[in-house]
Image 1 (cartoon, helix red, strand yellow):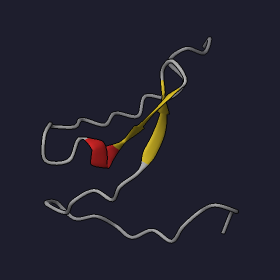
Image 2 (cartoon, helix red, strand yellow):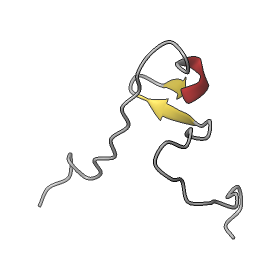
Image 3 (tube, rainbow, N blue to C red):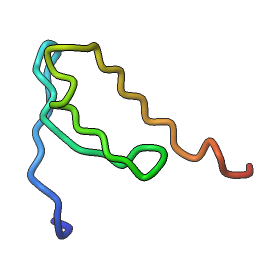
Length: 53
Protein backbone atom coordinates (compact mmCIF):
# COMPACT_ATOMS: atom_id res chain seq x y z
CA UNK A 1 0.00 0.00 0.00
CA UNK A 2 1.45 3.45 -0.91
CA UNK A 3 2.67 5.69 1.89
CA UNK A 4 -0.19 7.78 3.30
CA UNK A 5 -2.84 5.48 1.81
CA UNK A 6 -5.48 3.94 4.00
CA UNK A 7 -7.50 0.77 3.66
CA UNK A 8 -10.73 1.44 1.79
CA UNK A 9 -14.11 -0.19 1.66
CA UNK A 10 -16.94 0.10 -0.82
CA UNK A 11 -19.75 2.48 0.06
CA UNK A 12 -23.34 1.47 -0.51
CA UNK A 13 -26.22 3.71 -1.55
CA UNK A 14 -27.29 5.66 1.52
CA UNK A 15 -23.94 5.32 3.34
CA UNK A 16 -22.48 8.50 4.77
CA UNK A 17 -19.29 9.55 2.98
CA UNK A 18 -16.11 9.36 5.04
CA UNK A 19 -14.57 12.68 5.99
CA UNK A 20 -11.80 14.00 3.73
CA UNK A 21 -9.89 17.18 3.00
CA UNK A 22 -8.96 18.33 -0.51
CA UNK A 23 -6.98 21.22 -1.92
CA UNK A 24 -9.26 23.69 -3.67
CA UNK A 25 -8.77 26.60 -6.03
CA UNK A 26 -6.77 29.47 -4.57
CA UNK A 27 -4.54 27.41 -2.25
CA UNK A 28 -7.34 26.73 0.22
CA UNK A 29 -8.49 23.43 1.64
CA UNK A 30 -12.03 22.09 1.86
CA UNK A 31 -13.09 19.49 4.41
CA UNK A 32 -16.33 17.54 3.95
CA UNK A 33 -17.24 17.67 7.64
CA UNK A 34 -17.34 21.48 7.46
CA UNK A 35 -20.51 21.12 5.36
CA UNK A 36 -22.11 18.07 6.97
CA UNK A 37 -25.60 18.80 8.24
CA UNK A 38 -25.81 22.28 6.76
CA UNK A 39 -25.44 22.00 2.98
CA UNK A 40 -25.75 19.53 0.14
CA UNK A 41 -22.38 18.53 -1.31
CA UNK A 42 -21.85 17.41 -4.89
CA UNK A 43 -18.46 15.90 -5.67
CA UNK A 44 -17.37 15.64 -9.27
CA UNK A 45 -14.01 14.35 -10.44
CA UNK A 46 -13.27 15.78 -13.87
CA UNK A 47 -9.58 15.10 -14.54
CA UNK A 48 -7.52 16.45 -17.38
CA UNK A 49 -10.00 19.04 -18.63
CA UNK A 50 -7.21 21.59 -18.84
CA UNK A 51 -4.78 19.41 -20.81
CA UNK A 52 -4.41 19.44 -24.60
CA UNK A 53 -5.78 16.48 -26.53
